[in-house]
Image (tube, rainbow, N blue to C red; front, side, top):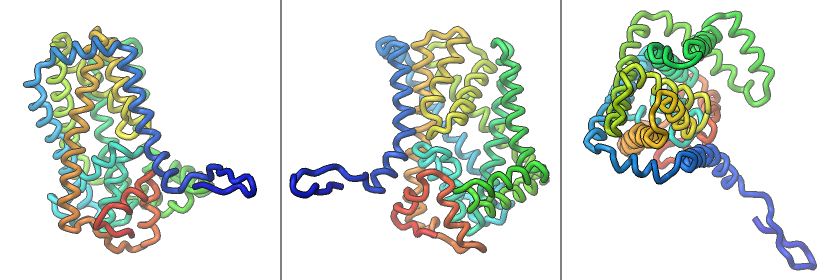
Length: 362
């Protein structure tokens, strides 16, 4: 915006338009992550990384991508079963498509996994707190299994067991906060006293109720087998990439350690898709395990490509299918004001989703 300055006839820049401000705030974390990857390449030596790419056996990429596809299909199946437990009666094909569509937004939004809960609320009309509980349980279970699978590999690292215990205790603390009434009351009072958060108290209470209820069901706990399948697929895909780069020295459990570092590091960074932090974690652990830094950087980038290409392409196609079916047209919830507020719980999700064609705002 430009304002005139009276008799001098000069113009000064006014405040940024709200849309431009939102766009900058949305892109800033993504740009920061990409700058982190660029800095990593410069630090390692781009020419050495290019040489490592030149030695890559491309035949390993296709089976790795197929394993990543199975990874997301298992995620969608597990989520479908969890959604049914909170009253969302959508078809499995619709929930698989919503899961993939949500992955496309996960790559560009911080806390992007919650966009799946937003999309599920739009599709089913179930309260956001309930759909958020399904995502919370799924991701906590998956993270716990990833860390458990890395336990044998952690024995090779200094203080590795301490790091494993720290992450495990963190997960247990989150579960306790969501399930133990006294601890939850403390968190609830803190949220009620926090400006900007207190309007979500209803969703937070429902999240607490649904997490407790779901964790008490045997079928929900048995569904963790599907999350274990995801761990296997992700580990096998990364192992194929490492073999394609002629990194033969790492065993299955060493690769599991690298995988755990990538997922946990990315999650803790709060960057969109963990971009930058994920790659730095992979390179750091691989170098500690004796891998050449250039080959480690190439492996990190190839893992990023495999984990991003499938959900981005598949998610975009899934959204087009959902748009054609009008599956994401908002349904009425029992408390519509909470449904509207739910879109604001994911930074940038509100404006992003409201601008999508053929998707009505709640």
